Length: 541
Ligand SMILES: [Zn+2]
Image (tube, rainbow, N blue to C red):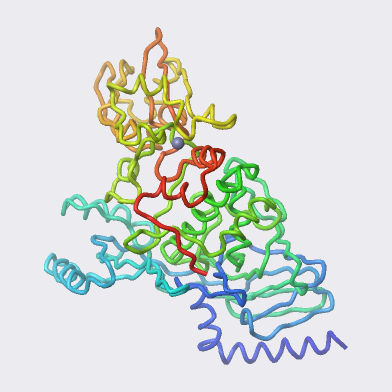
């Protein structure tokens, strides 16, 4: 009986879907691709996060059964008798059509004069420029959050060719460029879900929700290199709060994504970012930083994907449900809706690293671009807040500075000060991969240091030539994976000895320092104001 009813529903659905494809189904998809997000009934942002892409099939499982929603939350539901497990495949898939543009200028959305002038400027240079809006805007708690930016872009080429084209334009006009990817046509295909004798088809997307609201949904064969360690390459079943939808990626393969309330997402993220046994005030600072970072990212990346955030290390370390820790979850609940705002308005561009080593760094030293007033480096030792670390005082800094917030605590020690020794042959082999022309390495010299003493420009002198190397991560990797670029270089025989401080780029919040401050009785407000200058906390929801 149930099965017969289902068949009727499925049939009805098919005909409706076919007819309504150009209207309601298209609208549902538009939401997946938009930079906007909705709020749950509970008043929390509902965020869509990629689980996995490039799949031929997706297998879902929930003990109490799964409701299938062809049109997303609020739409009609199909209940099946054998509905504990579903296998989803795709038929007649067509890949997306994408193209790369070269971004030549970035402006604020309210700068109409500037935008018009930029368009004219690039027309006069012989291009046919287009403006793209990225970011999002939402109002809540008496505050309007606006993360939008206008990109002026020129010279569209096939996807993948944009970087090369951008370099040519950068060279010709002497400007920095980057790539904007445009989705010219969304991928399409018939999503087919099977459970027992039931088959459900819907164009381009199907949503799945556990029937019991208190249950998570299991997704089989999720690659473990998304979220957590990048070194593992296996797969495992992962569980997710909220709903899971299956749609198509650029290649027309299946992508599974999770529409998850903000608190559940943060509960999966925060324990991966900070030891859950850290003091409560430090966890609360981390929770507020993570929430601010999350809202800042929405609508500014994954612009051509059917989700707001990807789950890999570069986006967000999210591995679903089951990674929660009660202390971190409590910190998220207690700081509900709280974010770090610039005193002049707008979300802070949140950055943090494990240990600043006693001095935080300026954002532009590490990543280039414009100086961010809320991301200025300063001493993490209250007595030396204004001291700049230079070649002259570096030795004394590395010997001392025991009063820095990140110097304290047993987990802090190894990150605060470290020494790495690399044999001459090993260093030569590493350098020769990238710079074979300079010959055998004779000497390494810090040519330029940031305010914390982190090396911005490293000169490598060889017996056949020299090269100047920049980029925080690049320098660290080239030298065998050093914890930071805050180091001095000595020779011991043939070996190079690096004596250094800190773990990570050192910009924004020092996590070990946050723990040190909390241990000393400081609250999350004071911690965040110490690491993000000219900012205040605001409760958005
Ligand atoms: Zn620190």
